[in-house]
Amino acid sequence: MKLLGLFLLLIACARADEARLRVSSFSTVLTEIVREVGGEKVDVTGHVKPGVDPHEFSPRPADLEAVASSELILVSSRHIEGYVEKLREAAGGKSVLLEIGAQLPGAAEDPHWWHTIGNITRATRIVRDELIRQRPALREQFSANAADYTERLEKLEKWVKAKVAELPRDRRKLVTNHDSFGGFAKEFGFEVYPIAGITKNDQPGGRKVAEIIGVIRAQGVKAIFSEDTENPKVIAQITRETGVKIGGSLLADGLGAKPNDTIEAMFRHNVTTIVEALK
Image (cartoon, rainbow, N blue to C red):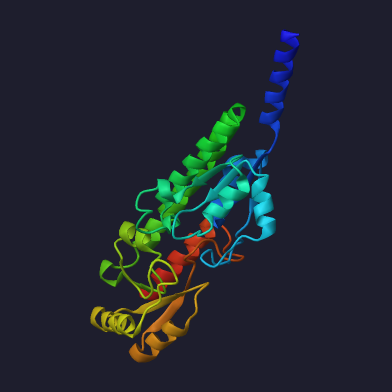
């Protein structure tokens, strides 16, 4: 009987390793990462869709039902999802909730960590390690998938660096709707002048708008940028008073709607828009 019990336990463990890992993701960037690393061994529900403002998203009952049956829940970081405790309650202690951004450098100051390839690569490793922990028999497959994805990210990073290098350093002045490109600016030597704060609830008053107008004039800023999920009224006011052009719309809070619904497409869109407008 003991041998039979051990045999049944081994079968149960093998079946658990073979079963697709159920994942709930509340970040468009993390949804791509876990699908790339997990491949056909994960069943991912991306609750926040590309093009949706994550600051405004709130989980519906159907989202919480999916969370209740998930084994892994992925969220970005504080300041982005204000509903993490709801997710914990829905999970009922039966699943792992990973706050990826909280494990990355600088995420406490700026939660928009996905604007550097280095952070995306770090997030990929964190996701890989958790998938391996939950399905140890699939270590080799998850590791190989992560390595392939990381290689593609390295190629993308080379392209980003080459494209930014086309822009003289004295023209790297980035005026955006809200404070979401701090990591990008630090990595590539930009001065960033956000109109609003880190969260979109931190909207600018008249004094802040006047300061931005002063900066644009004093620094000789060539263009300012709106965002795909942002109200353009303040940007319009600034362009009227300064005569500066709108350089285009940036993807600030995650992946955009098609055709910008991948990490590579997001970077190519943002970097090309910035460089071409400020040249």
